[in-house]
Amino acid sequence: MYQYHNLNNPYSDTIITFLYGIVIVVIVLGVVGIFGYDIFWFLRNRFSKVQRAPVKVVRKHGEADFITFAFEGREAEFAVPAEVYADVDEGDEGLLTFRGEQFKRFVRVDELSGGDFVDR
Image (tube, rainbow, N blue to C red; front, side, top):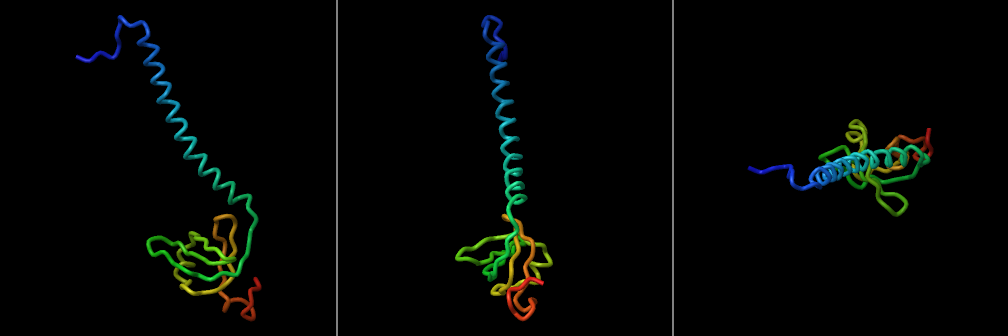
């Protein structure tokens, strides 16, 4: 039969306590890592300034409500509400409003006054 404690070894309790300590530290670091990552992204989005940019819709991702917009020589992907996803088509151009990596609003050119990038 396997014994967890060797009564002849004076360090057995110290070793077990040390191993429990390592397990607790690993669990705490894992929890901090998960919540720390979420808090980092929340703060990044919260303290970023709201930006507006003329964009073109280059891709819609069917498995989730994500749309990729092209602007300023780069592409950015945003999670969008289902009604926006259904209303937007690839190739649409318009004005994207966002904060950090958080989608705020998309208005197509034909919905803007005079076909220009002027927010109503």
